[in-house]
Structure formats: C-alpha cells, structure tokens
Amino acid sequence: MLTFTIRRLILSVPTLLFIALVIFLLMELAPGDPMAQVPLTVPPEVKEKMREALGLGQPSHIRFFKWLYQFFIIEPMVLWDYMWGTTYTEGMQRVISWQTRSPVMDIVIQRMPQTLWVVALAYAVGVAIALPIGIYSAYRQYSVFDQTGTFISMIGFSIPPFFTGPLLIVIFSVYLGWFPSIYDTTHVVTDWASFKVQFLQMIMPVMVLALQTTAQISRYMRASMLENLNQDYVRTARAKGLSESVVVMVHVLRNSMIPVVTVIALGMPAIFGGAIITENVFKVNGIGQLLLTALFANDIPMVLTLTFIFAILIVVFNLIADILYGVLDPRIRYD
Image 1 (cartoon, rainbow, N blue to C red):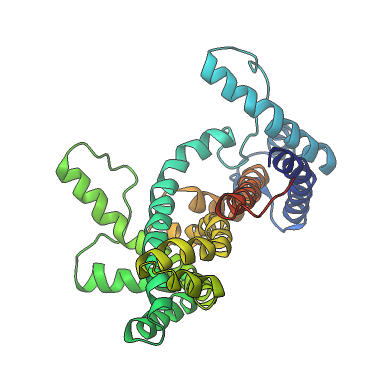
Image 2: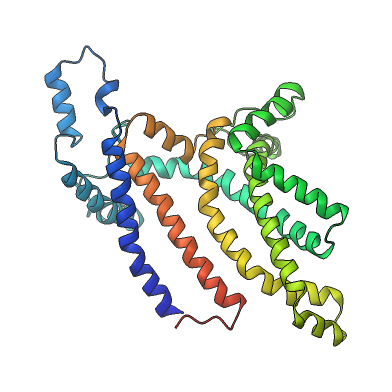
C-alpha cells in the first residue's frame, strides 16, 4: 500500500501541473484587464508602473513559472516561518492578488473557516442521512419508503443550488420568517443565544448543499445494496442461522460500501463547487464567493491558486478512496 501511495503521489504532480497550465492559459485568453478598475484620473505612466509592480509587463511563461515557484516554495516557507518563528521568507515576494494587492494565501486562510463551517457540516449531514435511506430502501425495495426516497432523490438531482437557494429564502425567510436570508460571517459564538443565531443562519445553506449529497449517495447506496443482497454469500449466511441484522449490517453493508466510498470521497471536492453558488446566494463570505469575485476582476493569481487548491483536493480524495478500498475489502492489493 505504501508503494502504491508513493507512486500515485508522484504521478499526480504532472497532472496538477497540466491543470495549472490550462487554467493559466484560459485566464490569459479571457477578455478584460486587471487595471480596468483603476480610476480614469490616474495618469497612463502611473498605470504602467502599477502594471510593472504587479508583474503584468513580464511574458506569460515567466509569470506562470514565477507563480509555480511562489506556490510550491515560498508559500510553504511562509507557513514554516509562521509555525517556528523563523525569517527565511523575509523580503521574498509571495503570490499577490491583483485585486486586493495582498497575499493570496492570507485571504484564503481568512475565508476558509466560513466555507468549512458550511461545506463540512452539509456533507456530514448529507452522508449521515443518505446511508440509512439507501440501506433501508434496498432492504424494503418498492415499498412506500423506497418510492418516496426515489422521488425526493430525483428532486435533489434535478434542482440546482441556484434555484433551491432562492426558493428556500422565499419560503422560510420572506413568508415564514424562520431563518435569516443572509449569512452573517462576522457573527461570533460566545453563549447559547449566539449559538442559536449561528445555528439558524446555517440551516438553509446546509440544507441546499446536503440535498444534492443525500440524493446522490442514497441512490448509489441503494443500488449497491440491491446488488449484494442477491449474492450467494447472503443466502449462505442466512442458512447458517445468522440474524437478519448481522447479515445486512455486517456482511452486505461492508461489501456494498466499496463503490459508495468512491462517491463519498469524490463528492467532497465536488461539494466545494456547489458551495460557490450557495455562498453567493446566501452571501457567505467564503472561498466560493472569493473565486467568483476574482473571476470577474480577472485576478489571475487568485483564480489560479483557488482552482489549483480544488484540483489538489480532487487528487487527494481520489487517493483516499483507493486506500479505503483495501481497508473495506482485504482481497484488494495494490503492491
């Protein structure tokens, strides 16, 4: 397993570099100018000096390799300096946002907790609901519960977050007045009353993201359970006198989780994509809103860094899924 993990990590390096190159070239070809937001009263020579300060006067390939050096060398060294109190990066130029003129990773670290609060909780809720629904739907195939779950899953698959979010705002915020329509990122939890406010403002964003997660994983869980319930080893286990709960929850469930693990692992990076829309609908000041703002401003360093982080998440969770295969099924060997 260790050899397989190291081999996968080495092979992921050229993949990530290619992804970064594609994103960079797309941003280079996109229309717009980062200096377009500068007031018209600024003289042209001052604008030119500002472009040179941002590195816009350099050729594209120089800027790309400079970003690679800053992302893989300087930024990890900055983290090292912060953790151990050293000064190795003093005077070095970090990845600077063209829009805010501040280090990109500092902004990402500031925004990350808001996104993790919403995304991680939504995914945990979605998985916790989806697995029991999928298991029971398969065990009670074609029952009222199964048909209801199928209907709700089709709704979750069909309705995108940019429709579900405003719909929930209209129902629960405008008409019923139960939940706030805007997520207050400055709110601090200090006591029970402030925790209640935080809980209420998180319900709708979490519901929007968890709906798609529940719909997808519950259908995969149901299909995998149905496939294993008809296997010979299940009939053998029942013939040996094992209880139905042991047969279903131990033997069938463990084998059924193997394909579902892939969906769960790969769904974590995917839900960050859904959070881009959800954060803008509910005004969550997180990574998704930051990415859209950077796209509109043609902020190449910010967009390149954020999308590259998403690509790293996809590679990492792919590797986690492969490792979990070996944990769930001892017959799977990679070395």
